Length: 206
Image 1 (cartoon, rainbow, N blue to C red):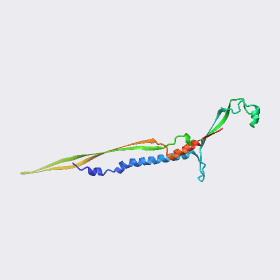
Image 2: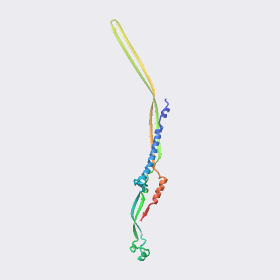
Image 3: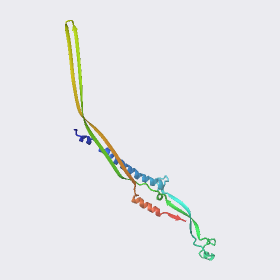
Image 4: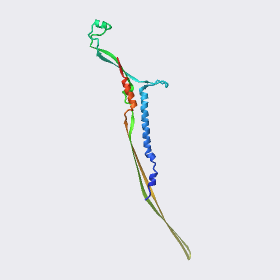
């Protein structure tokens, strides 16, 4: 039986194992850069001037809100004592106010934060050897007959050749399976704190 160790040593494991790992690292780097680009493109107003800082993008909401009328039931004398005009509404229990809310756009979206959680590489190499033996035979014959009155000449020749060759044939079968599991990871601590501060900046202006 042949020694298959040299055949195994000839396998380039840097390609079969290192290749998928390198691809996973590049994918993780691309995912991180996608998060950065998403924040820059979506969360900020680009003014086209690299010398100035881009302003944060806000979304404005306007709606009507009913609030208790603080002057309900007051008399004209009460209004005058408080320095309020006589036209102040004192008849309605509730008043409608126009309310405007400015919300940072980033706080309304799910920021992509993809992380490769697990990489499984299954590499199987199957080497099988087969001993081969080839035998070939060659046979050749010739004959000559000559008649010249009383003299008869006969010549014959024959040859036989047998060739035998043997060797070893190695069959190689490679199977490579890569399974990647990616999850939407939690936001980094710094980015999470920034979003918390942005949420605190949300204010309603009546």
